[in-house]
Image (cartoon, rainbow, N blue to C red; front, side, top):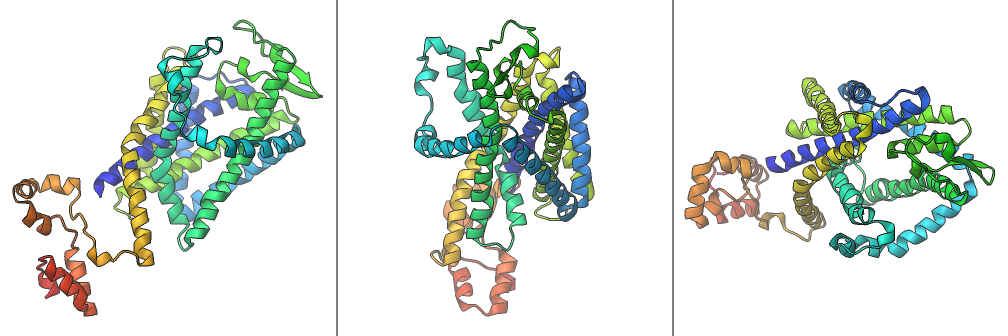
Length: 432
């Protein structure tokens, strides 16, 4: 009902705004590496609103033109960058890492799935490793990413369902779950592998970070004929990608390509999310009014701007932790109510499939007629329902779609349907 649409809208809005905020910081780091442009709140705002402007144009052109063409463009950028980085460093190392990573994944999947860091969060940790990193890891990494993915769930689910119309469930699972999972493993192996190679090679060479203000060139060295940099010495994680690329051949070109890819990815994320929010707030209309499309596209940029501005105190460049905390909090707040909805939607999907294969008789199901907003507007009936439950459970809480179901029964001459309506006390002129 309306409550589910509301939680889906809020969840999608904050989920995409969080992604936009994190992406803006990465794009700003790219601008610093390529054009020596210092990150600041003003730079962040310019990036956000340029992305919002492009997303608004894309969403106005519709799903088959703007959104689709832009998605194909950033897909091409991604693969070009991916293939280059695979062969630019050490293809054999990355291939070995991919195979080994799959083994580690299957070996530790159960342990990691049920790991809640009970001892670390209770205060038991290895003193040599530091208390802050061990106790805060679960919250800043595991919980944050769970919440972030849940916040994306309504948007991604509806969007994929819309573009997958006509496909079987088997095709849906293979095309939208198995293939993306495989591509994610390959992507993380290549980019994560290059980052680990730089870090471990630097440690092997004895590179130390030194005091604050140490020149970045002091963290660079050569390992097995490859230029490397110790990424952990950088003062922000947003710089990791472009710092790692700077050690490869054609670093300026690939950095520019990566930055363009980041921009187009966040444009397509924003326009797709706006498209889904438009549908939800337009009552399921797949072609909502253009003014409404502009409103939601601009709203996403506004929310991202507010979150980043709220996390920037004084020098925005030095407030990375505050910026990230504001974005993480937004994802957690947005995902929490939708987590409950997601549990019920999982069960609803199971029931839908049972109806589809004939294991459940749809005429024997009990439906809720009113959602929470309708009940609030019809408070007297709701109050009487509490006083006299049996009568009002039949009359007001059963989902008998009055006119449509009655006319359908009359048109099709379904004696079974008429008998069902009579048994539940349904009385409608259109069905007589």
